[in-house]
Length: 292
Image 1 (cartoon, helix red, strand yellow):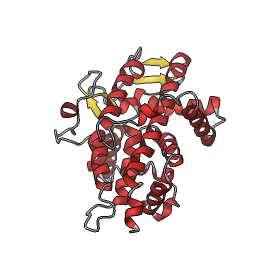
Image 2 (spheres, helix red, strand yellow):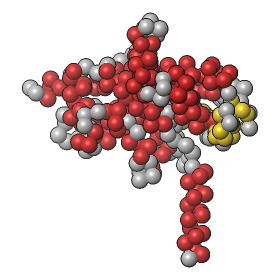
Image 3 (cartoon, helix red, strand yellow):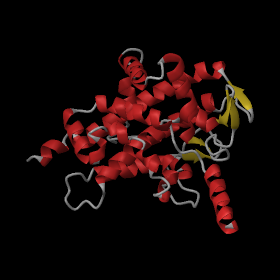
Image 4 (tube, helix red, strand yellow):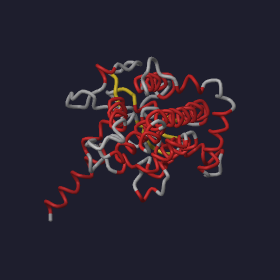
């Protein structure tokens, strides 16, 4: 009995110290995928629906947090949710994309590249991949890479070890960006209605940010996606906004919320638009090829 209690205490301790990997939380990931769904071509939408598990009901957004739900079953996937830099405000793939054992390509940028390549085998009967899982991982990691503190500093685990108060609630800086800013916005602006918040972001995409959208979707050269670019944006935003004016035991209130919420909203929009562009590029020409 004493041994069982000891094991339970150890397991609880390990779980309590585990980095928070739920970028954006379920609500943020849902919004990313819901926005993406609205910008899919008919061909891409058809193939996405085909690849989704039956219990998704054809709704990509419903499984956008799947990668978080399975991270303890697929423990190898834990480092794929983020990238860390050595305390500098730039991302360098060769330097930063590895896990704690130094294995290269084991970061969120490497994961996006990997699952993009897997989905490019769609239609090849010799493909060894579970493309349903590839799609769900890719959709999730495209959200992760746009959360600024998922490309944060290694020393503080992307803000996980920086303890703060969000108004009166004790939490950590990473959780503020994953969950608290979105929760506060939903309560204060959208009557806790996620669909209303999605509508507001979509209005900004077609109005306030309309001149920026083409730039969001463009990658240099002929690359179908450019996660290095997305990670570079995130670490710069982490330095300019997430970490700025925050110390251990800081209390973050209205000044922080009102100046940071627009960053969160735009990153969710960018993630959704870029996910749609990626899936359109992967699948729009393959639906016709499949039917030949």
